[in-house]
Image (cartoon, rainbow, N blue to C red):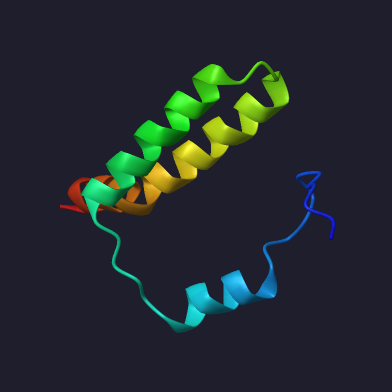
Length: 76
């Protein structure tokens, strides 16, 4: 099983399909917890490439909750 991603791959169909079909509510507490864990993990990585991907994942997870709130507050 190839678990290495080059960054050019599309999301697996099951993930993108699930995102289109179902709405999952994610709490800000969970996002905060995961973001904190990813930041701590990134800080321990010696690889710049791994840190880059962890930081990118951190931002995407952060935006799941806080990006939506910022967009709603700007529209108001």
